[in-house]
Image (cartoon, rainbow, N blue to C red; front, side, top):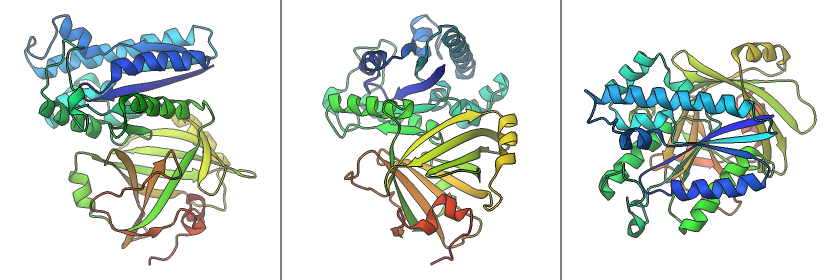
Length: 366
């Protein structure tokens, strides 16, 4: 039995409501039992529970997050008892959406009061898909007519959209679906991204890797659309074109653990499968570590810009340079770089900069 839980989020009038119908049709036909968790904020606000009806925004957010988590627990239990081979749980917004409606102090207070940590709440989902508000690039289609709980002007919608992107940045599979195409193609792109996560067909990624000048780390850490993540990646014994690894990922003592297998399809494309594992399973799998390769330790800065997701890796062995990865769905897709990043050269096909090679030896700095 395979249960996958994803989040569909986005700014006001991003297309979530229409997307849900398309997801239901597409993946039901593919053999999935599709379950939808309705947007908790809309349920509460239309029912009379809102930030302006409680004594404070913090008290409201505690209610919303608590209800969100309880709903997800119930749907998970239900999914486990359906007898279906494949279940897709679709959350109309997730826990981290709440962060966009609080300041940093409020968010910390709420998380502490509920005994939650940010890394686990953000990364518990298998994937997160952000549908950009129509107010960004498709203003003529912006409307709030389909949701009585929404009141944002286009300017406010853009502000909320940016805050939501910042809240989810750092998730290991976060994708922004922008308005660069027609609305129909926008939803087609969403379905394609979900299919990739589910392996329908088998996931295939086109990864571009670039050697860059050492970035302004202090500036990155101050950006709301950038999240710092600490990673320890250990390679396991593998055979043939298969490559297996385990990864510890998180920050400030809050970590999650993953197992991943990648199989080469071409020079730039690979099929990837993976799953989240427990701390105990992670420790057990470390016993299968390849003794010829050292664990890779790096600090990753996950940056969302230009409707793209960039991963900038800082290694302790380097002082003048770093690596940046971009995932693409098509070979001919235009590569757009972040504004303040200085690219030295592309190293996508340079074996010296492959992760498995870095586990053997770090190249000398240029």
